[in-house]
Length: 371
Image (cartoon, rainbow, N blue to C red):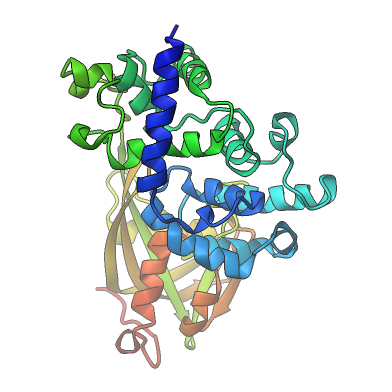
């Protein structure tokens, strides 16, 4: 149990530091619950500097829950394009619809009700309730876990349910009676700017005299490391299929990975396959046609949490067969300069940028077949 005097001292020091040092972020301009809800969805597993431009554009397009609820999923995904983890965008839209239908257009101010929103868990609920409504509820993200572990020499990293519960309970014990939202943000801010994962700037920390790790010079040992995630390397081939100046694209199935986004067709290489052999097989299986493969347009490497993907992109044309897509929800032929109207995964956006360089768009895109 933490001494009450120490908690009061910690609260006072941290809030004073936050008042002076907090970063200027657009969602901190006011306590509008909808704006805070949007920011918390965007900030899940994404850095602040990445989120800010997306947030500003989002607020111009969907400044209220009502506007968001009325927007099409395609439009929402387009505005989210490049931010990743697209289920967040779909859940945010579903939450706006739920807010309109069940809560008269207002973000709910109770834990029981806000947890009914799609995609809202304990962390997001705590952030919105404390920041927007000053409810006395904790938050626990990676930054908070790190600060707590060092501050009290807690051998916890939240890697399992027991560890997670202990950290939640500890954070709850530290909350002040008022300014809970500021206190939660101060903890997160401290972890993001001072109590860094590596080489923490302890001399600038407002809690350095209260921090047991700092006092015992054990900052590098807390929190204990998590089990590393094993990554899988995948080779993928994709086809940019031209037909009389138009390009074929297809819509990913709604319930799958990156559902609702558009893409260029292709798939994973199997053992022993070359890039072009993979492409011919995938297009035949997905679209029911044979293709002629022309020049290679690009090779792009990108990462997901558990995967490292190398994408090989080729300019192609249909050779024989009847187009009958079977692995998508929709498909269409579009002009290259119209591709930007559709939401795509980040890797496909790279392809579109390349295609929309005038020097790269063939006037009569009929690639010469490979020998």
